[in-house]
Length: 243
Image (cartoon, rainbow, N blue to C red):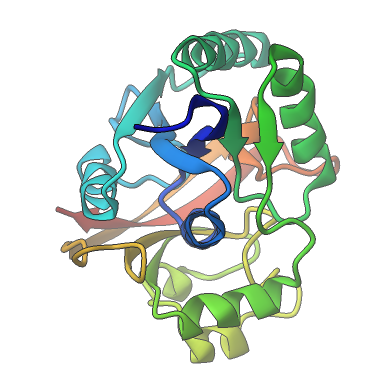
């Protein structure tokens, strides 16, 4: 039985930063992760921003051995509506004896501050296992640990279509433009992790088509692909993964 003072939920994106942060929490053993929490675009049944099908995220959770809970969001949602949904979810988790919330953020100060302002007053202790780590070192560590991940989304203004669908390896790091953070922490690209030390078995999928889509600037910080000087529209290349 989990000690309620150590009971934690992990804010799960399905990508490499989440996987590496979860790995470190599991190794540390000071808190116990009993739930993966992820936000889903309810209109298309895919994980927000990453565009990965819910079925594949469920397979991740099954292989990791930690239950997954979905927060289903409307495709167009205001910041106040987003805050209300997330606050209600956090309150429910607190009522279920969760005391810790874990995030894979690395260096986005405004996003970290936002999370702290929203959740700390509710009584949750927040943890950021990768915070302020060198992103290139993190990506090499991720690869050296045996994790495997595929790029599922790239921001078209920073990376061309060819990066979508690539497996991240050391050659990938070398090929990244100098203007792109090695971990894509500014929203340059997103990934889906399908194997590694936290998985019992690999998550199987086939690669589908690449699709280009444009969106308005995100209205909530969870999408963390924004900057003060951004245009009103952003373009992305998505590589579909088929369960």
